[in-house]
Length: 496
Image (cartoon, rainbow, N blue to C red; front, side, top):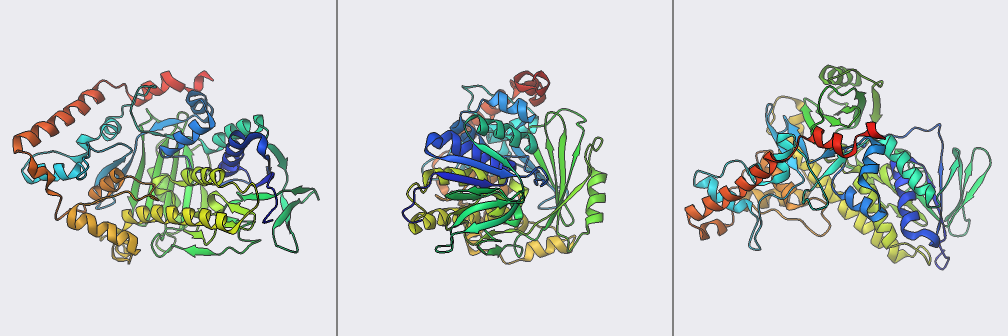
């Protein structure tokens, strides 16, 4: 395989991961490769990754997708933020928005100016200086080709898979129906040579993309890549998903509401609402979790509650020989910050950049694995942050989270912000300074020190600068239409 030309790509499994792969590979590499996707209508997909982050727009731009057509096809709504409730303390709430907070200077982040103002008795809330934060809070939304607003989507995962399937098949992807019975390997080098279906059909390939979900049919069952368990830091292991009818206008944010042993989500789409509860089965039974979810949802249930079991962690390698794991087969952090679809799409972007046209060479695989590992660990740290910084003392689950030992990489970040109000985005980090800032402040991590750049201004200068920025944002938000109003005019699925 070291010198073998890679021409035939076989994707094992459909769903969001499989059809994202087919769409990206056919649209970007076109005639250079042949793409075949194997899936069975009898095997369901997890299909609850319905909230996204703004990087999905870059992926869509890469593919040349029309936003309105995509939103109509997937009955999507806009997302500006996640609203967190009951995380630091019961009754608390804060917004993690996708926007930039203030205007940073080369010397330091804007929040240092805000901290200086707060020390002098003014300045208001940090969210006052973020356009997307204030728009989300007001339930407003507007975009155009000229608009500088950072947003993502809530979407129907099942419809998204179908939309990407149509896109991929139109560009040459071939779909083969059937369950995989066996995986054939070359006896000399162990590379996968073909997938054998229950029908006896063989699907041969040069490169195989494992999109078979948690079971990891190729990466784990065939190659025994190994799994690094993260449940000591991310102890939730179960989720129950339920769809309900909409009962009012869709807000432009996801809700993440903490309960005694985890949290629950609410994701508003155009035609319905996605609901779910995430919990640790050591502290809450499945029946108790389901009752809690049913008690909390609004609107009539339109699906039966569906239980999903998982184990947080990652494959020790996501590229082994001529197999690359993508999506749930590569690992799972948990859905708190809506990163699942991003991790699929960044994995595909990385694969296209490092595509093994002349064979799966060790250095290429090592580079891919290193990048994937570091990025996922940084995402892991950001998710752990929400649990570790709780002040809740009301249940064993939250006391465990508050008191647990955390990775040194995260401990350093917390210490930097606690001691000196320093937040940063490293080269492998997905989340920006603004995200770390909003979550750490929202979780009541109060900096003891700060950069003194604010002392370079007089109180009057600082007050005028902050008031001007806050006023401009408030004026802009006041002129925006309600999210539901804009959604109805821009991409209502009722028009399709």
